[in-house]
Image (cartoon, rainbow, N blue to C red):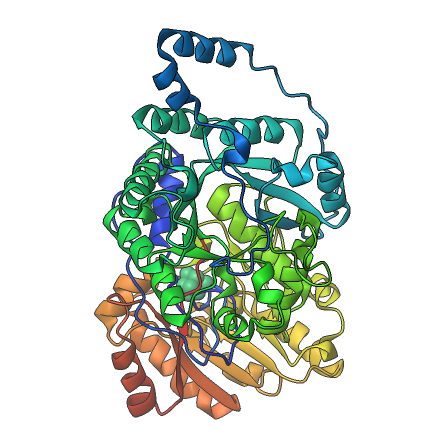
Length: 572
Ligand code: SF4
């Protein structure tokens, strides 16, 4: 296969998809520290598809954010209060009552994807009348997970207590830029201590706010940096407040190598260029109520070009309620409205957006369920993919086979290889789709009999177009030319080449048990033209690792077939 099941898309999108930063975080979560910056992707997609493995500013914020919810930093209180203050603080910590568990379990969803509100302020006084009700309504609406923000030391503690009370509620701890005036080193040490707690999944809400300027800019920058360092130290991502400050935010993130922590630009309302820059340093963009507003056409256009794999859903509740709740208190249950808007923008179903963005949350914050394993058939947009094996002659270094086998929120790790009847049962009615593609994490032609039987039956059932994604090594594996057997069954074939020379192919694809595979792939391309109506050669955009121009030259000039470079789609 190519680099990952197929993310078809005709729209331009920002690439910025690398896996190194993510891998670093994963390693760090295992107890090691990573420090190397992820590579920036230069290739901004593109026209094509990326196959699975084969191969407000809160300008509309109506409510004024309360200053610390009325609470002051206890550290500054201690500073003023001397010994008495210190004693009280110690006592307070000792006497902090254990939070009462209110919701201990989440309902079973039977595999239906659930939503995550990645940015809420559940301890805001707007929720005082019915905080529990807001969480319960969210669950009823399928929003099973909520990440609630701390905005100062005290609110961070209270948010952690709240998180301890509800199964699906998690906390971010940190000091909001509007509240950093009284911060000192001890505050930061305490934030670091809180960030180590199991239900603290991020350091936030931190950042720079040059609109409200609750503290001098220099002060904001200092404590923003310090809190990023805390996040890197504890190995948890950051949640960034960015208001009229995108350039400085970017500069600080770059200088602090913040991709080591990863994170999200909360309630992103910037332009294409800003989006591209943040994506290039491995950050996610938070989509909130702002994208649902009627006057936010430009913002919607920006989000149309942001890969859905880099978007997180959020409400920023109690602020920024989407229609039809504009002007009223926002709450986590309304995050579904954001998902619907993104689905419209990306030509997906709301369920697909939910699955994908929830998977983004799981990978970034470690919140949410592992996708169920064993997807034999799964759809992305108008394409149905069939995943028939996890076996392959290659071990391409970017392949999802080598990591968690999750693609676009679908876990493609097969418990066992399905037979043709199982594949057909999973595929259902093929006329619902514009195209059926044999492509998962693995090489479909290793199950040639299944591919032929399924393709034939799907043709009989009215499949409009059947495409095979392959590494082009089938003739060697089967010790015969298999292409005549596919004639009439397969309308198109995408052959993953990934290299312009035998040496480059060996480096990228690491073929096992086949000597000199590269000429065999080229020969397979030539033979394919005799039997399959549409033949293309593909390679993955991986700047500095795969020479796309050279691959294209081999495909078009030497082999005489169209070439398509597709985005590397993050799968780790
Ligand atoms: S290892 Fe196999 S399935 Fe994965 S990208 Fe390479 S050829 Fe495709």
